[in-house]
Length: 264
Image (cartoon, rainbow, N blue to C red; front, side):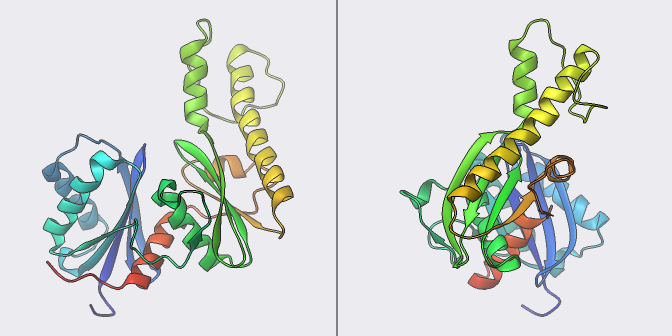
């Protein structure tokens, strides 16, 4: 691999698959597609080729790839797609992959790959201890010590899941856009629902952060990432840093720690 070789980082989540093109640790392009566990290898190839072309990335420049996935049915398909497309071996985040982070959990294998990747990025970019709030399909709260140890955390239903459940389980309530209403006191049903969803969820996030901080023996930085990070972070009183590409950055860091695998 040369200094000009690009690395493709791929984060497979329950709702979206996020991609990033890196030169070293520098992110040059990022995009996402909707997660479809039934998507074929050929369909993925077509999408990826089109997107890298639009972003001005030459297919031959991609000399490595790394994948983190919480959607097992799509993992092998994605790996086969990338290996075939670029003629490379793909690193899949999991047991045996060097991360530099000690996982202090009862069963480290239970921890989602995305949470470990976030911990690696936080420990590297924001040393001194942190809480990472990842706002995706689920909202996860992860605690990383100043010694780069993954201490554990919490998992809550994401804001979109919460909103959908309200619509599905309450017969007389409509489906509403997830948005910040004009005020907390709603003047109609839609504003009232938006208030409960938005301000209620910000309260959940801030409340969890306060409880986690109270149990930590250090003062953590609080970092938000994921699809709703900026939306929720605009109102949160406890989120200090919004880093939308934290997970992709973590993948680039892990790739660097492990070195390129042998070519196919």
